[in-house]
Amino acid sequence: MQLSNEAYNLVYEKYKHQHQNRFTHILGVVEMALYLADLYQIDKEKAKIAALMHDYSKYDDFDNAYNLLNKEDLEECKKYPFLYHAYLSAEEYKKLLGNDNEIYLAIRNHVFGRPNMTKLEEIIMIADYTEKNRTYKECIEVREILLSGDLNLAIYKSLEYTISHSIKNNQLPHPRQIEVLNEYKLKVEKL
Ligand SMILES: [Fe+2]
Ligand SMILES: [Fe+2]
Image 1 (cartoon, protein in one colour):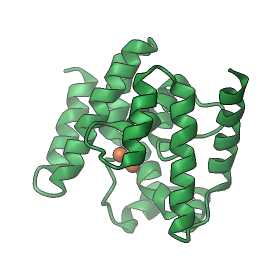
Image 2 (cartoon, rainbow, N blue to C red):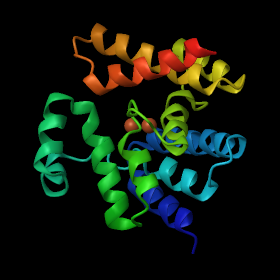
Image 3 (cartoon, protein in one colour):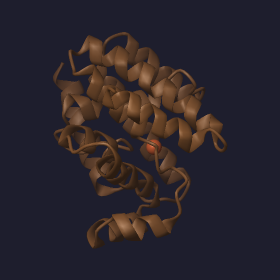
């Protein structure tokens, strides 16, 4: 069986009785990731596995974090709790499916990326923000930019919006989030 089919089955089982909306979102991310993988000539099987697994641990309890994350990651997640599910999902991918480092990083960094992302990381991060079930006006705007072919601008705008969203919710942006924002600002201005 193809690994992406195994990933599909795992996620299906995980969400068939609870949080069914999450499964709908995940399938939306798969669809967008495959479209982008085709456009940017990225391995589609890898894109599919990363998209399927990216939110695998979205609702897992913290006990799982203590078993799967190292001390450094735990400290970071305590400060920035939105990272828990991404780091945990990446560890679950390794535990349950395989050890492709590109897939691992794409899952781990899907919330706001990291400096010098691979194309697969970029695709999973932006597919998460722009998949078709996202109906916020910011997501629609970024989806339009992305579908017009401007990947860098789409990533830049998505970061701008997620950072201002964090600030509005009295949550400090992660320093890496700002680094990524600045990296894409330069890319966008260069054009
Ligand atoms: Fe997520
Ligand atoms: Fe997601």
